Length: 352
Image (cartoon, rainbow, N blue to C red; front, side, top):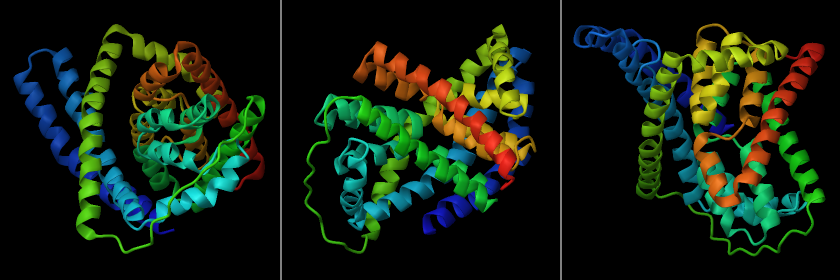
């Protein structure tokens, strides 16, 4: 509940709303005006400013959405790490994880996956068997949201607590079922797990803040170039007509999910970065296009959707082309199928 209040209500609510208002009311109009005066061609103006420019979209997402959410999340994560509680989580879930063919050691790449799925995928090489590495890679690609994505979902869904509960139950259920079925389908068994447990202690303020700062600096150094690159790719896609074609191609699926056709852009953005797709979902909600049941369906489908370009690259390097393509194809089909089923269930139950 404390994490929900701090990350969801304070980070995704108070801080994000404040920075968003500053950007949309003051900074973006200023950038648009400067771009109009200095750049004579509309094409270049669209690259830098206007609706999907490098500064007005890419940097706005980083500063107004990603930065406040990841800062609050990393601060909580550092407090848990400093207190010595994370190793205890590994032991607590060791028995549960054996049901899906894993050991408590697997919590490390999964927790790192909450930070960034790419980091989680990289750490899977420490697992003892190819079987465990495959299961963890599948779960990271399918059911583990990254920190910014998680924070945005908590922030949006916390406006309706039942929506947040439904999303959490869906992801936990899918995590357990997919892990269990995969463990039964693959030959082998879980490995034994031993760990030294450090004593519980009060977190040191300086150490906690240093770890938080280092994680934020590392994350922003990775995310800023990718978000700017994403803005350039979106600009090029609009320029040559590829992006409108992709958006139009996904519109029939959006109609099946009973989402607005604009929601297709969430999934296209989400392939560049998971948090990019979540930030687009945040924009659509604030534009009044996603509410209630649609938010839950969007959040579940985005969580399950194909891993971002960065994780896709790591999976390709660590697992090979065949495994990566197979996992990604299955994830896309599964994500949209689960979104469709969830939407029908929520329509019948009318809980949201």
